[in-house]
Length: 68
Image (cartoon, rainbow, N blue to C red):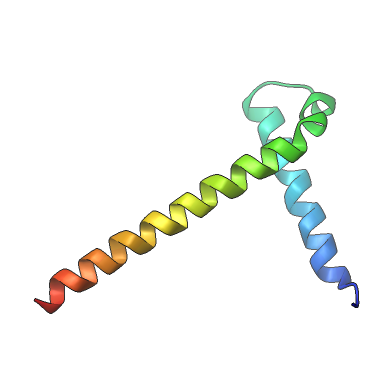
């Protein structure tokens, strides 16, 4: 398996940005947010999953209603 450097760098940048955003929003030190960064990234992923899921459910519901 080949390591894709652009994907790795993008992942690192997104994780660092989420950590910095959480530190700023919650008024934490960056060190504290970095310690909790796995949880921050996990929660962001779960929220993004739920938004996509419910958006898709809503879209399918609207599309089904239009067909009738």
